[in-house]
Image (cartoon, rainbow, N blue to C red; front, top):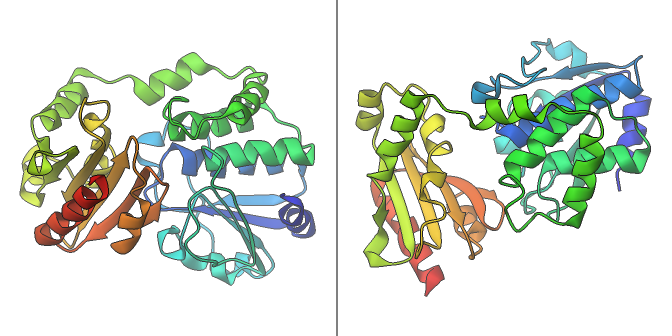
Length: 312
């Protein structure tokens, strides 16, 4: 499956790895994991990782991004990870590269690189990097394994989501054989201080059911974020959407967060395919977890109406 991408990695001395903006554990796990995998198996290659800051995943070894000049792309292979569309990619300079490739597990939206491996059956893009390693006979070491495992854990919801398969656990077992320090990893991922726990709890009070249906939502205004001292809307938008998960009688939940110019939308479902709704509003993602942007509160209500029709 990955033969052509491996060929390009072997052909180019410079490899530049991109992923989507506002990265989650999977975007960073696949990006950092692939970098370490290439460096461990092709020590004569120069590998760079680029993009916006790692945010809450800055604890990951290798999460500090490189700052590189445009000239480095001239004879480079640029690989985009975990990105369904060009618009989502952090640092659009990948288009300057001699050859471009993409590895992704989201539902297909468009082709924007020379080579593409898109497989929605994987629970994570990081899982695809683990499969690349196994398929290509590349040696895993602790650093690459830890980064890849982080991506698999976060995007599978700790191996709970229905995208988790026997293959997921097979690949995870290969990674765990590299003596990953899971205690430290899970503390970094899930341990919260009291202030953070209280912050999360405040969003529980904001949950509303749309027209008394199985669609729940939270709407966060920019004034509310300012009062909370929030400077990055994504910490609320993506970070708080799943306070609505696992509620009885709720099949779809959406977190709306104003960022000053638009409203960020994070859509989740336990049983419905909400991806077409996200696409309708210019977004995308997975069947049961995706994102989009709407222009204002009124358009957010239109999205809720579309989601309500989906349940009917």
